[in-house]
Amino acid sequence: MSTIQTIKRPIIISGPCSAETEEQMMQTAQDLKMTGKVNILRAGIWKPRTRPNSFEGVGEVGLEWLINAGIETGLPVITEVANTKHVEAALKAGLKMLWIGARTTVNPFAVQEIADALKGTGVEILVKNPINPDLNLWIGAIERFKNAGLAEVHAIHRGFSAVKSKTYRNEPMWEIPLALKQEFPKINLICDPSHITGKRDLLQAVSQKAMDLIYDGLMIESHIDPDNAWSDAQQQITPKVLDNLLGSLILRSENTDDKEVYKNLTELRSSIDNIDSEINELIAKRMAVATEIGNYKKEHNITILQPNRWEEIQKKQLSLGLELGLSTKFIHKYLEAIHQESIRHQTAVMNK
Ligand code: PEP
Ligand code: MN
Image (cartoon, rainbow, N blue to C red; front, side, top):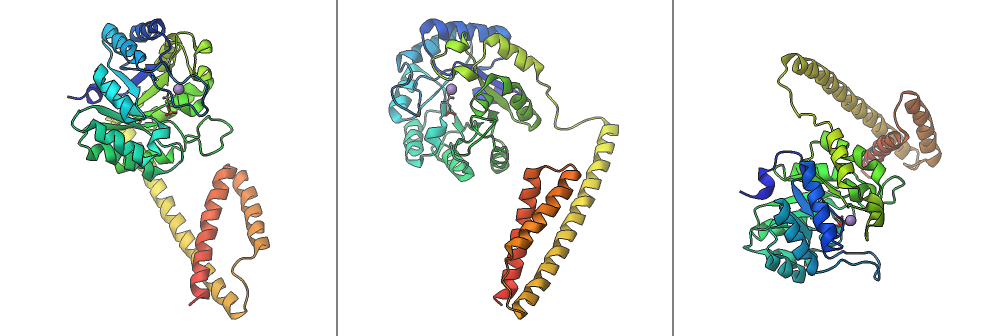
């Protein structure tokens, strides 16, 4: 059986952003092993950096350090490959698990070349999301590996850098990985809070959120001396801090055997279902009025859009929504959706 399928949830992958020296690799691995909570050892050997002339990884020699650290601790090991040369070297060194980085997933040509180079190897692949929030690009990369005959292809959510974010290094946009899981229900979905947050103090909250969204595991960067790490220093934590973080996570289960809890939950859910039906009916009613307005505007040669009126609606509903405890972002989002749909209804009658 594959490695990943034998691990009980949560699958914990940890290790340094980059292998730096033989000692750093070995010490990190041993400290991680001591926690008793880490299942797979990671290290970047070739680092895809945004700008040249920064540390770009130690290269092939690091593969040997990683393999040795794996043998010493008994942990399976994983590294990133970004081209066929990396694949060749990694296979030669004996790696059985590889991940595809966000900057590679964006490029179908690169993904296809790597997939071709892995045909028949039985290597386990974890595909990070592309840097831009394009679900199909992520799905496409996973399909390319599956089509190459690889049975174990899984996904890592590391956030999206194409979107400016105040809080995160890479905006999580949770709806995208959740849609991926819907497309591939059997896939193991791993969250990478290190690259999502870019900073230590947010790791715990993002990890807990991933657990509450039924992610299968976490990939968290760990370094024996994080402040002096050669890459991603601000987001790495010591194995000890990782141990505490993992110990603090609450693992809630998806379902319950408790009949009383189940009954109460079912009642609450049926209220939600009723409210959803009411919302649907109300929206349909609103659209019927929009159509009537469309007809009336057509008769009197008035445009569909009146910016002032739209602004007035937004202002009024924003203030009401805020009073009712809704968030600004949500109010804007749903009003926008309703407005678009109204325009669609009015356009339909206008051009009949
Ligand atoms: C990494 O995991 O070290 C890495 C480079 O990740 P990403 O591809 O998510 O940037
Ligand atoms: Mn990193």
